[in-house]
Length: 632
Ligand code: SF4
Ligand code: MSK
Image 1: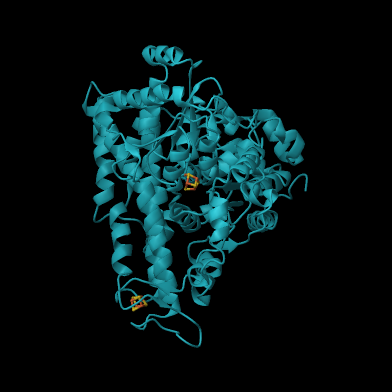
Image 2 (image 1 turned 90 degrees about the vertical axis):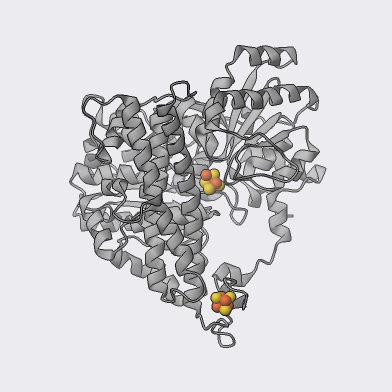
């Protein structure tokens, strides 16, 4: 059994892990241990099972080629770009569903959804070149939703949203032949090229990987984020609480877990329904408490201040409290283990997406047409299940305050002041050396790395060195639980320059930028910083860096590649599965810098990784001939 401190740094999780050990309840950490040693061929990316002559694995000096003759570079590159395709597909299919919901909302006056941000509607419609003169919000929304949907099946041309990148960046993508065309097309082309006997050149394979990743970041994910903002409202800074202690002993606890906010938005509305509140009262509960898990948590936190129960590795632990009356799940990052686990507890686990069903788990299918009714039906199931709860749930007491809800737009408001919507003060702070630079930390948890340790230690080291941190996905939740998203923490942990900025504008040193698809907000922030001027002409000129210290999902691979393809140096806590191919390793960790301007570094130690990022930031500052960092 791994020592507690090796499993998590989060106190609430440690309390639950102890309880799980005592009760002999299995968690992902236990299954991870049973899985040791993990397959080296898989870790290094040198196993191929693309055709049934295989599976083949490369053992240097013995089997240097697969049965078809594919070498290690081809095999590892094919495996890697298939991960990008998987991640881009997940994000983009999410975006497609949001576009569909926007279309319904705009076409159907009786829809449960309404357009909450008409300003953003017009701004995004403008990017698509949709005529705005005299058109109503509904008309514009119909046109925009149709154009966004068309982006998925588009065969030729270029994604309109990719043109929001700085001019120099777009030119570079065009010169390299990696400007994304249609979102589905880039994914399909990866699947075609990596079929047995098609593309053998690892560089050419990776070129398509970059194009596909860009179609995610500047396509599918950006469509998801922007259209969600239009439909559900663009977040603004908001106070909330997080961690397992947000589950309430006396209330019906409903956990919403997964990714797509089309249902969870309605759940938040339904939780105010007087009839359901009355029913809760009747069953002896003091109310209905909605809490989020993983990225659904981030979505409803950002827009409504709904508490966050936890991040990826806490999903089983939440159920083990015995306090969750209903956990509804949609898509992505839902551990199949929840299904067996729910048999041991009174928790009703309910799947809601036709794309993700679980054997033995009740399914209540969500449809945008009946969104509010379905949300109420689910809540009713949870309320009725309250009576089956163990009299004494085991809820760790830990909670933490945070401010969430930052966006590429609210950074504008905060740093520029409401009368001067501009990035000028942010750029000036970097130019003057008050701020060294900025970093985006994103991605998951992974039992290979102590839970939350990678995210939190990296963020602390960066802010100590006057690097403003923006965080997304489960990384943001880790930082929030550690208290790094409270403005006052700047005085304790941030360098003097960052402290001054946090004090002047009242922001925390680590900004919550939302869910996985909201990593596209980081891209837009970078584009705004370049366009503001004074820090070079391309994203790759900026003193910024990215990281995914505890990544595990294919989506994280796609995110990593769209960061790198956009010109951002990015560190990963676990290596990509490329180490079996020296050529591919060299390509992603060195050579890409010469073409797209960004590259990867693999470093498990988050403090060392933070210093790789700081060194990179300093290198970029020197190239821009900026002043010395003020308080170095
Ligand atoms: Fe083996 Fe080639 Fe088939 Fe892959 S594609 S399994 S390397 S024969
Ligand atoms: S939920 S992809 S574990 S960040 Fe977006 Fe968290 Fe990673 Fe899933």
